[in-house]
Amino acid sequence: MTTADPKFVTVSVWGRDLHTISFADRDNYELYEHQGYMPVGLQLGGGDETSLTIDVETGMIVGWDKEKFLEGYNQLRDMDDD
Image (cartoon, rainbow, N blue to C red; front, side, top):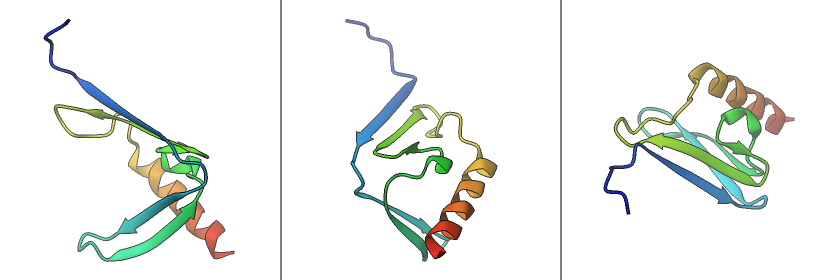
């Protein structure tokens, strides 16, 4: 068994179409909530799967791209508003 500390932790969840994703502002006021499948554009998986890898040292999501996330968020809101 190795004694090295982990560098990354990956969380993968299979959730069918039962995801609830809440978006809040800096005061934790809920801006929007989506229920259903995980949207692909949010960089958190897609469809039935939620998956992300976290850098243990920084607590940051590996490969996170804020601009891509915001683009996916805006597309999701537009689709749900229809």
